[in-house]
Amino acid sequence: MQRVTQGALCIVLLIGSTGYGQSIADAARDNKKQQPKKGAATAKVFSNDDISSTPDTIAHLVPGSDFAGQGSLVAPGRWKHNYRTIRLDASQFANGGTLHITITLGNGASDASFDLYPMGPLPTDGFPKSLAHAYDVPRGSTAKIDYRFDHGQVYLLGAEGNWNSKAGTTNTYSFVVDVKMQ
Figure 1 (tube, rainbow, N blue to C red):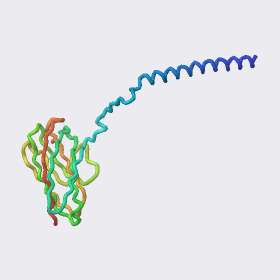
Figure 2: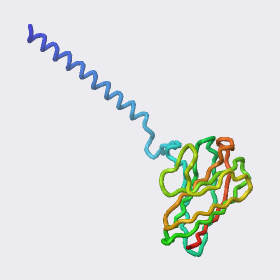
Figure 3: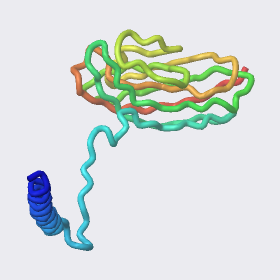
Figure 4: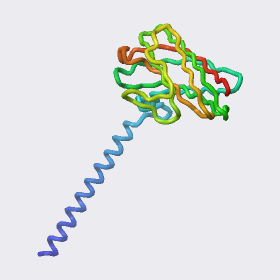
């Protein structure tokens, strides 16, 4: 009796696996029908994760010359930060100097704040502990940041809408950076 039961079980398993194999083949055919035709381009969907929230501009600072540029900023909301950054590469000034940054804010909806940091992670909330700053710069006005340093290195100038501006409002700015050697 045990032999008959084992034989019957084997037959049932063989028949079941054959049916399962056919369903896999059917699934493969259905999948092939749903694939795009050869030569058809598949669309890439980009999310916010694919785009840096802090696009960088790199300013290579050299003795006897200034660097001018422009950018845009977004107001992050109260007690938050969403910096757009400019890398200020002052590494050619081995003996130090003074960074002079002049910023002219556009007439957009947001006022602005600017912070100068050493390279490294930037804060995302709370009161910033920057090396130098210009806070609450009104639309259409000019601000200046001066920072004396002892040896050449790379700094980050962070630009954002100030905390009193409505979150999401934007503005543009232009800037000029020069370094006076010590």
